[in-house]
Length: 327
Image (tube, rainbow, N blue to C red):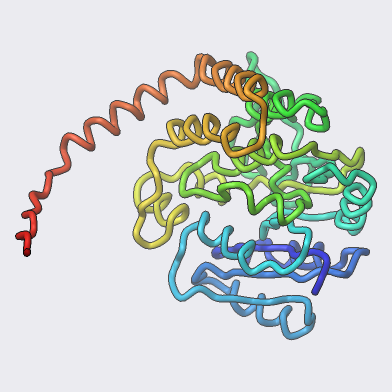
């Protein structure tokens, strides 16, 4: 059994897939398996994966018969994992050769840590570092075509290694935007205690919030991860209607259209899923209240609540006849 399982869910990733595979397979720490789940891609993804699987026995390649959606495909690679340590990978991000080695060292030195992650930088489609430009209090990024995208600056220093669970939980909710920790190296038995990916935006942050209550994180003070941002990715996440439905939840398009409500529910439930004292749980919920009181959360949350109520009212109720009782 390998020590580490790396799960790579992919859908139509021919543009950057080879670069990502090379950065994973060229790791200095070689005791790992790479689980690739092709989510019924329609481009050259399948052929690329088959070519690499034929050359490297560490690769286990699966092709789904139909599009399962991003969440189920991401959970699939974890369910197939055999290693004691696990990490997710993406088809468009890059890893420095010592990424895995340094994370393994960090977890060995800190037995209580549940996750190890190095520092990350944002890169564009050509692999160049993205430097967010501030204009009137907002940050933007210009791609090669001159298209302007609104972007967040890098996350500030956080207390993710604090011995206090509520402090780690607070800083995930209130100070974390990029969530690069979701691509860190995790203890698989601890990750199984979380609710994993759901079919809505923001589910990765909820996973990290749940993990933060289960143990501290270790940040490696080196840039070993390159988090790619590119126009195709932005269009996919910001698509409306069937396009986004299919990406998130597959062919049926059944993803949850109320992510803030789902995130709120997940944050409220997270302290109940762990063995915390009553005081720690109350402190965690205070952090959820602080997250909820942010001005930008309220309009979306109210709109989602209205949508949910009106959709429920518009759904016709099906009358079901009660079966006759028999003596």
